[in-house]
Image (cartoon, rainbow, N blue to C red; front, side, top):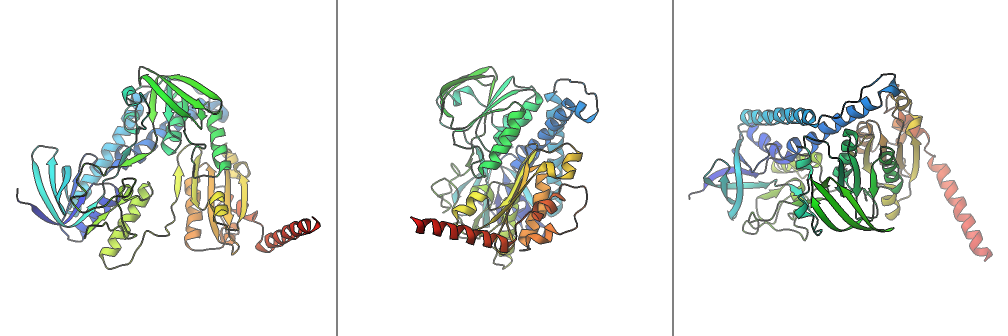
Length: 482
């Protein structure tokens, strides 16, 4: 079959790929996007936005349940997961429609089918509607994403566990949901389904849930979840699984306190993700993979194949939609003759539990391991007057300050933590001293106003240096006395 030639071919319509397509289309460039299933990628269909939609439904359920705390006499109807799902589906349908309109208005062609390399920069596309097309591109951009990992635990595959995709389509409240994994998806859905009415047990084989966070942060969040009745077990080495998710399951595991058996009704697997790089002939296209199966790229997102780029999670970029969007900016600017790089990017994150956990920059642990001398300021959310006004006082704010007074890191567990973090991030991007926010006039009463109190507690560099010198002197004296 003769190949159809295009100036730009984009495989996958996720965040970075679709924005690149729309940009090129609006610029008058010829572009075709080949998408296997999810128009717009996973974010608007099965991940970020649908999950936050259902998490907000669970927040409403929690507010109703605790209405008497606010002087409102509540009723306690059971959560209606059919209605929760309907609301979520309605949002997704609207998002997909908006995406299709953008393809139409920008002139970028969207082709639904599965693409495989048959030669460098050339693909055979098996169309979802039947038949096939052969597509070749002068430039190719791979935006093929990842999928949920299912750990090789005896009996787990046979138990037909849910991933986030199936969970978001549930029309019932599981009696006892067992969650395998200790990251974002695990903790967000553990809390949401507990609030819908499920018993929830979350298991993580690692020593700490959220392993990249400081222990005080994780401890505070797990305490909040425990107060809601969620059981979390770290160092959980699952030996075997029996039964079938939805009908009844038994999980046998080794823990630090010995062997344990947990009986539940359903299993959610949230144990990481695997790049969608196998089975599409990347080697035929001259695209190389690293040892984890991600596409090898330069800091300009160029692959080993000439005029082939990779975008987002498949390229090993941090697994956040906002990072995929920035990958698009890197490629966009470099195509126009720029010299933009992925190196040194600030990577903000927000875990959408309630309260949220937001983070930017260094953690205390990272700073210590890198030998960076920081001053740490920390206040409980109960010190923030907005938190008191809305009765959302769980959690804390923490900032890491460099000797030159720049903010090196910020973490917050608290209501609207993601919004407050963004304010700190802007200050960090501008290299501003912490005093800019600490002495700034911030609206009262807002959560962001808490930054006045937090950064007003930072010890001056002079005082900190004096204390450090004094401590060193005492240590030297003690050594000499021996």
